[in-house]
Amino acid sequence: MSVEHLIGCHDCGCLYHREPLNSCERARCTRCRHELYRWHAGGPLRRADSLVALTLGALLVYLLAQSFPIVTLELGGMATGATLLQAVGVLWNAGMQVVAAMVLLCAVVFPGLELGALLYVAIGLRRGRRVPGFHLVLRVVQGARHWAMTEVLMIGILITVIKMTSLARVVPHPGLFAFGVLTILCALVMRYEPKALWELADRLAPRPPQGAGAVAVAHAPDTLLTCRACGLVNGYPWQRSKDGACHCRRCGAALHRRIPNSIGWTWVMLAAATLLYVPANLLPVMYSRMIGGGTEGDTIMSGVVLFWNTGSPGLAIIIFVASVVVPVSKLVALAWLNATAQLRSRAAPLARTRAYRVVEFVGRWSMLDIFVVALTVALVRFDALATITAGPGAIAFGCVVILTMVASHQFDPRLIWDPIESNGERHV
Image 1 (spheres, rainbow, N blue to C red):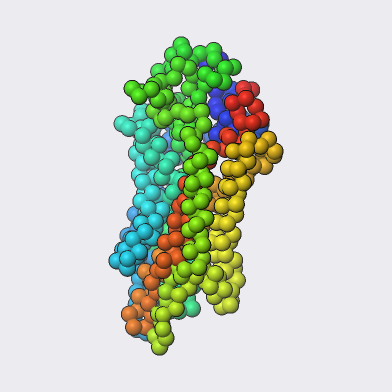
Image 2 (cartoon, rainbow, N blue to C red):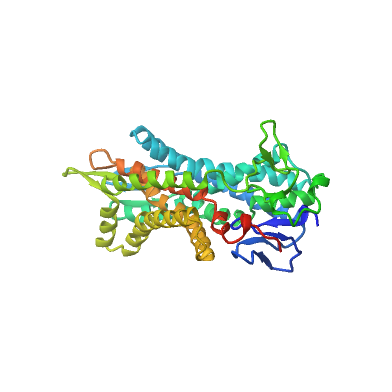
């Protein structure tokens, strides 16, 4: 059996022969229950058509969302509003360049980069060919998707709007509705994973075979390396660059049996995030100045208490979970996963793998508080009447979120399964 018919599990490294699926079926790893691939309706061209339509629609709505104000606040005969880019500009001019950069990248740059790159690739697939830079562009999509947070931003917008109703009259604008539609379209676009697009390209525009060295080696784990980028199982002899490093025959990404220095780098990121989490909770994330009063600093917990006492327990719970429960749980869970992997524990590998998936899924939601701060600062600019500015706690908290996301991305879940079987791989 050629390696062309093998597929590797992302979470445990187990290798399988690829089998055809019936309608609505999904193939899962029998060891860790990770989804390997799924059945898709229609042929390759129909899938390419759907991707072009969805991505083009999402990109157009994205441009509308970035161009129009989200809401306008009216207070004492004054009105203030802002687009998302204007909110970034307000933060930047107020000396909060770190927070401004986080919002710009996660809410503007990465979502736009993902949609633009996907549309570029999809148009080529619709024509039955690989566009120039196909592999690099799909790898860019993978990276951008990890950091694009449109759905988190939408929840942040809703929380900010509800919060502002107690301060001023809130008038919705097209940007608010555009972001709502964009969130739905992005959720649909997310169904098209880059790995599935590589396989779709192989059907529409087949590549040359890997060669004789890639045949009849399916039962020798040491001669197989699964690409973490495109999912291709590479057989020996591996393709090497001038410096001797191994690279995927399909997408050109570097090949490693395990992520290099995974445990060490994960510990470094966790240590830095833990140290920053203390000032993130003790220092104010916002400063509020109201007419007839002084300047007050609001920490994360004081914001939770404020929502609770003003009759919005639901919002208080959402912010508490996203800003306190999720970061702490993620730090504890990653430390547990990294420690057990370092000690080569054989206990409950499936439970640990599932915990890793939960950590990966919920980690991005901690950015909710940063988006709320950014939008609040941009909207509440009534000069002498009321002004809100960002505090140093927002910088520390934003860095905690980024560091924990990097730590979870750096951790290799296949290390959980390495003590269970030799090299962490088996063949079914």
